[in-house]
Amino acid sequence: MKKLNRREFIGQSAIGLGAMVAFSQLPLDLIARDIAKYKHPIGFQVYQIRDMLVKDLPGTMKMMAGLGYQLVEMCYPAGYATSGFGPLVDTKPADIRHMIDDSGLHCISCHFGIRDLTNNLDKCIEYSQQLGLSQMVCPGLDVRGNSVSAFKEAADNYNKIAAKIKSAGMVTGLHNEHQEFAMLDGQVIYDILMSELDGDLVKMQFQTEVINLGYKAATYFNKYPGRFISAHLSDWTADKKQVPIGQGIIDWKDFFVAAKTGGVKNFFVEMRLETYKDSATYIHGLLG
Image 1 (tube, one colour):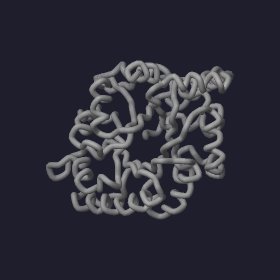
Image 2 (cartoon, rainbow, N blue to C red):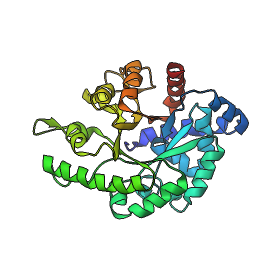
Image 3 (cartoon, rainbow, N blue to C red):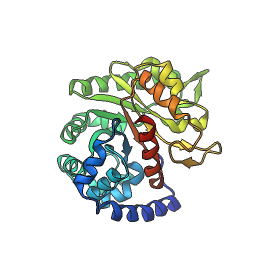
Image 4 (cartoon, rainbow, N blue to C red):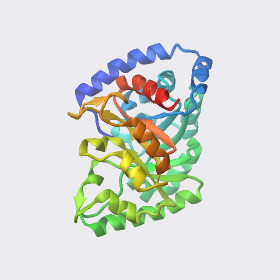
């Protein structure tokens, strides 16, 4: 999840307000019928549209449903309060769930920072249960040092957290950023983590943006079958400009075939707002 610069923020807000006005006029029964026609539901991550979300959560969710989405991945407001989610901290998770459900969408996953999962795990689990989640995902581990042993220790600690989450009836996910694809002692850090994480406890959430580093999601889905739960989707040109899904350099047919091998259950688009509609149209057209 990347922070927006000022120009991106203003651009998203302007586009988003217009789209929200348009889609908020759609009847919920029309949105529900539109959603029902899709065989393969797809989702979105809320981080990139958080400025709209905190101002009007029901309207934003209804807008996204109108753009062709069925699933939502949230961010834990208390843990992301300084990243724009502060206005939602005092909103009860049951109320957030109600607003999402009323839009015709379903929230199945949420991001929690490693500090919250380490220091306030019981509270995070309770929040997740009230929100109706099946997946709790962490965007990165608490690695103390830049050594193989430090990453192994962090992975071991996350296995323990995941065991408690599993006992609460949910799946634990781990999201990657660019840093997990750096080299350390001749190994890709991601591979070090995969060797240390318990595949029965921790499932991975692959972020396709690392195509900009030369790493393909399909390669890892095939290399580690059954080890994944979800993916963050974005597409890019050869010169690293973000474009709607299907308009960049990623081979999406290859991606979705390999995703079955990897065990991926859910796909969450996470890009600039103006790309969401074309991305949903492409994915639904590809998956049927």
